[in-house]
Length: 409
Ligand code: ARG
Image (tube, rainbow, N blue to C red; front, top):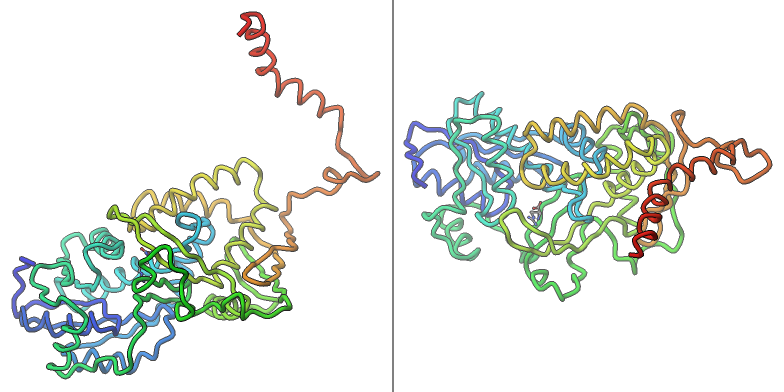
């Protein structure tokens, strides 16, 4: 890391409270002698922030800033992704990938306020998160120095044990109980679980990889029904009760989790070229995604709906690839948002044995016209026009077939 940092420099660090970033504080201080401001972002990981704050101080942070970003996370990142139906490789609702640009934006804000000239994070050199942190910082603060100790040559630790040893020597609190052998990242949109036995793609994920979601074997034998109300593509109430974004996710994470909804097992393509196996849980986000899709099916015209489906793949890639703060992502978002003006109404979901099944939908903007759809006596559809339509629609096929027939192909 030839950053040329000196004593007078100030570094803002994305602090998670885990072993890596705690060791990073001490390590950076020892290496450069500069002061470290630790930023602990609360995206709903459900951890008590106080002990983590203390830990950062014990590790030598000159200042610790704890920031509740839960509402900002949902409103500014998750709900736009929900409206775009952003699901990577058909299974991953991007909880981790959506959190990174927000954390990066917060780090840049703190750096500007505190007069810091470098930002550090604890991502490794073979993952997607380094790309998301780096690219977001580059987009928001082009001259900012970026430091990622775990991918640097100077980072001498070869194992977790060595880091624990280093932490002990420097009086940094270390995990007392034996931790689960997984790498975890949790927020209100979901949890990502990898490493340990999961690295063998043939092995079924063991029971201790379940966090927000119950095993199907343990789910109730009776379904629950839940009505989700949307306004302009944003979920605003549950069973008629208006809730804050955080309230909605808390409620649906609970309910969905009880019924075993929103767990997926994915061998995915990382941006850096390798395949990795990860388990995801996103009970609330999954219920919302399936409900939102259902409402769009009712209110969007066919061409808009199909075009949106195609571009949703691109939107998803932009999030996964760390390009949240890009012109294209913003332009795609403008397109998605322009279609959300009519995505208001309600969807009734049945939650049962790992599935969230849409069983009812209604909206003041519904394009469903019973008099046109019905097969009963009230049918108002002009059947004659169907015949004319077929004649024209099939005309190119007929012309082509005549030529083939003549040429005896
Ligand atoms: N593979 C996911 C992504 O790239 C999650 C990465 C973090 N996972 C974790 N278990 N810490 O978005």
